[in-house]
Image (tube, rainbow, N blue to C red; front, side, top):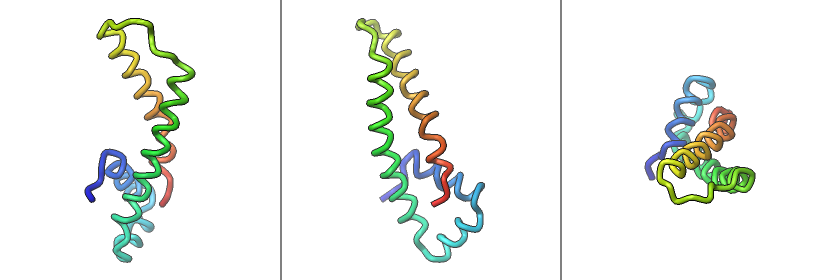
Amino acid sequence: MALGKYGIIIKKNLKELYPMRYSELTIQTTLMEKLEEREQEILKQKEIIEQQVKEQNPAPKTNEFIVMARYNQMIESLVEELLQPMLEEKI
């Protein structure tokens, strides 16, 4: 399985923030497995956070494209911000 968006970010952060752990996982040949596991955890957490954010910030009552695009971008930005600490955790 190939890494997705979050797996790539986790790998980059792990390499930069925890180089010894990155090397350890690489030597043990478990790096990809750990990255995939962590990415799946984050994707599950993202769904939960997104639902909570949408409950706190209901969608506008309009079908106007630009308004809905801005709303969706706001939701995505909030979710990404809330996920950031998880993306920087040591695995």
